[in-house]
Image 1 (tube, helix red, strand yellow):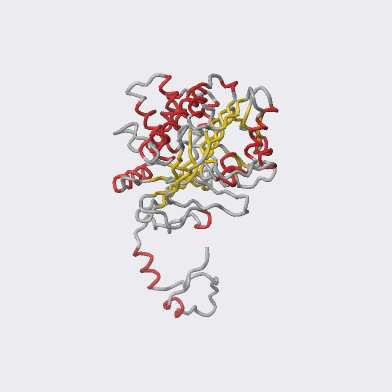
Image 2 (cartoon, one colour):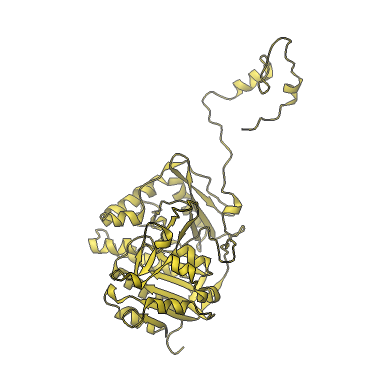
Amino acid sequence: MPDKPKSATQKAASVPKGVRQSKNSLPESSNRVERTKQSIPEGTEIPKEEIKPPPNELYITKTPPRNVAILHIYESENDCYSVWGGHVENGLPTTKPEKKPPLSLGKQVEGKLDFKLIKDRMKSLSKVNIELRIWLKELKSKFNDLRLVIADHTDLEIPWEMLELSPEKLPHQYVGALIPTVRWRKVISINDDYPILEFKADECCGKAVAYLLEELGKLQLEIATLEKLQAKIYLSSQHSIKEFHTHLRRNDTDYSFVYMSCHGFFKNSPEEMALGSNSNTEEQLTLQVLGDKPPNLIQKSQGIVFLNACHSARDQVDPATRSSYRRGFIEFFLGQGARGVIGTLAAVDNTVATKFACELIEESLNSPNLSVAEVLKKLRFKAVENLGDEPTPEQLKFFINTFMYVYYGNPMTVLRLARQGE
């Protein structure tokens, strides 16, 4: 730690001849120094200056609106994490470091943990994060139109949207079901810059294109819903995934919605992560292939991408480079210019996935003024309402699976989907 400048009294003090003194020590005898020592009661904790995240690592506009709060989750020393809340009027100071909890939604689902246990674990995490809960409740009471941005800079993979505001007094007050919530992260774009999340009214209008993998099961509902949009649909029984990829490589500028309903694979390295068939590896799009043959349609149209596949919102460090920069499909499509990307934090149930996607599209059609973040909040709220006082295993499955879906993008972006014939 740098030496503090000496006071005038300290500079004036002389050291007796023959007494050796360290360059940085204080005089052995000084009434001034002795009184200073005694003025602070023994055991008093001196508050340290609050440490805030460096502005150049936020990648979020420096002056967000008053109704926007930003929650940062950071790794700290000794395998701990801390949270810090940004707001123009009422920020949340960096919290005391806590041990990183093993609450990755992807790993818990992969380990076949009971859905009730996952829910109860999130309730316990909510309870101990009291400063965070109080901060959010104060902001929510002050701003009826509060928007929350979650910037998780860790590998925890915690579904922060499941944080309960009052876990003991008023259960089921989940953040993601009460506040329009989005996520953001550091992204390196195709232009070799870092896209900044800005908060402004934004409409995403245009055509839709979709890829549907029929080995998932019944697709009639998804097909019927997409046909309402006059979407260009690539069915796996009629088209290869490479044909869909070729469509994405076109230079079209008028696509607002790109949808994929298929399997998702979280492998040992980012390059191996894939979307597509489980039975035929030839019918998969890996992150490596997408990077080698970029989707120009995403770059030109800058629409919303919905990856309705397992693990599609997860990312990881490249074991080859060991860089702290985490890669994945969310990161890739945001870097290609997508205005927003919807993905999942774990292995999602096929039935819930179909229902969720169709409800999202229908809600966007029926409520054209709602932002994507507001639509997702509405769907989560329905899942919470469906729980009841004594939820069944089926209701718990629907609840957990619904909260697997996260959205990266501007909380004010509206997806303008048009019905057939409009």
